Length: 132
Image (cartoon, rainbow, N blue to C red; front, side):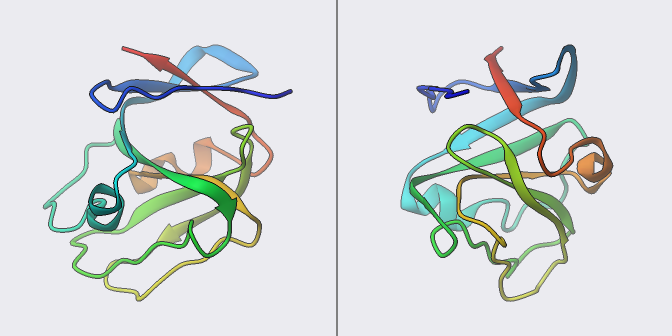
């Protein structure tokens, strides 16, 4: 199933699993498309609420562009790599101050959120986004 989203960078989004649209997994997700917003990510933040995250949107789907770093991070995060159809292709708990993490498969989107979300989203899940 092909999914096409046009993300408004000034808008927050809620994330659902496509097979369970009645339950919000993450309430507040901010899209990031510019080089600076993706590079900065969550760096220098002092904390992250359990119900928030960011979505890094790459221009193309591959492993290198969707790699992340954890330099200058003050806390660990859950990271989910999504393909062009928003299926989760890899996930990890990224530890603060580690140099980088690269997904096992090509990804176009990188969802960074609170570590408690890690067990709620699995590889193979398809995610859906709704403006809030």
